Amino acid sequence: QQRVLIPLAAAGFMLVLFTLLAIPLSRWLGAPGFGLANAIAYSAETLLLLYLLHRAFGRFLHPVPALLRALAAAAAGGAVSFAMLHFLGGVSFFAGSLIGGILLAILAGIGGVAAAAPIVLPELKQFLHL
Image (cartoon, rainbow, N blue to C red; front, side, top):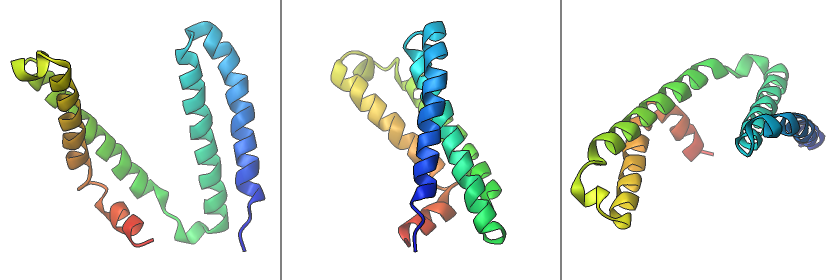
């Protein structure tokens, strides 16, 4: 049996938090304030749901190792993507045209994923077995 009211209440909490944050942040930062409010609200909702999940299945849920791997994967993927954009951005093939710039962005994204994937391999295996 599934409990749908808990995620629904969490989504309501996220909506209220977003609204309360978006108004002052958008006045202070302009349009980026909406993005920041959205990121904070979704992160708070995720942490709330993770806390509730941990409370319900405490001994089976160990999020810290997965969170550390996710942070390491994000750092590695970002670093590789940034390095590829930085060093290959000056190459005339990529810098000379719109198509070259789009191709460089795609290659940098693929490089970032390739750097991050080995770090989060246990989670990828779990995801594939769902």
